[in-house]
Amino acid sequence: MANKKLKVAAGHYHLFHRVAPTVANAKGYFAKEGLEVEISATGTDLKSLQALIEDEIDIVIDLKTPVALQARDRGEEVFLIGGFLNTYPGIFVGAKEIRSVTDLRGKKVGLREPNGVALTMSSMILKKAGMEPDGDVIFIPHTGASSFRSIAPKLDRGEIHARIAHKAYANDFKRAGYPILADLEEYLPNGYQLRAIAVKGSFLERNRGTVVGFLAGLIQGYRFMKNPENHPEMMAIIKASDLEFEQDMDQGMWEEEYPLIPGIPANGSINVAGLQVILDEEKLARRISPAMTVDRILRSEYAQEALRKVERP
Image (tube, rainbow, N blue to C red; front, side, top):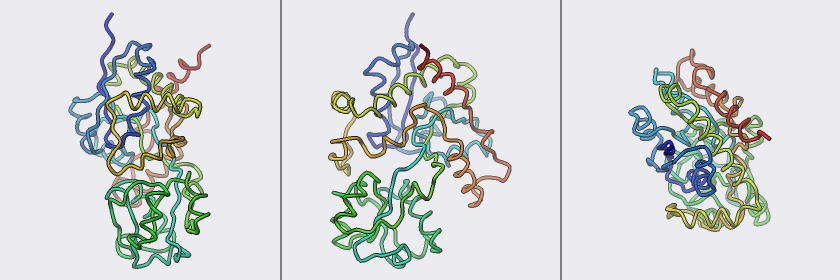
């Protein structure tokens, strides 16, 4: 019998977003489930959502959670079946002369891209300090990778005065004298469901076994990535694939464990508490209706069944 073919896509162009399914393909995890998985990138979350709705792709592997919540709230049959980034291991680092978040009033805050996670996280920190992100600071997009090597020179030159960075570099910043203005894991102790795996309801109904098999393969891909002993083989798989390092990437970030790998769930599931945090934020911002609930979008049973399959003796 021929393998079942699946079209899956990442919305984000970052290489990291496609590593897990690429690993699962290379290691034969999908093939073991009778699946042939084609992996692509649409380029944006909205393009991914539209492609999913129009049945151009079967599964989105990294849909930004607010995009999914807004779509479901307006009646689209979009459901979240598994996690991708269940928290954000990051810090908010300042230039050496900055001593507190309020010192950033009138200053420049760097972003990697105009609408990415750095904007979301920076805005959260600024608001908690009593500041208005839209008026009290100047956001500067396209300031490179979230590494020490990329950010520190820009802080020194005054191109930016603060930036979200990966927590893996916290000690590098501290040793060099840059203040850590906020630790995002302290701000968000229950996690933060940044991105998740999304499927259209009608596809779920017709393809339960296929979806469970895909998640089982992906969970194994996640676990392979999270094991430091597998790092050399993971890098060999990346280099042998059609994945390319993006131009603004600090490739040194891949020399050891990539800093966002800790945010990937080893069990493949959604962080329900972290999803509720975002739902509450979206309601407060009036981007979704008060009637929207987690239960309307979450289908956790697929990841649970996949996990049992992976861990079956």
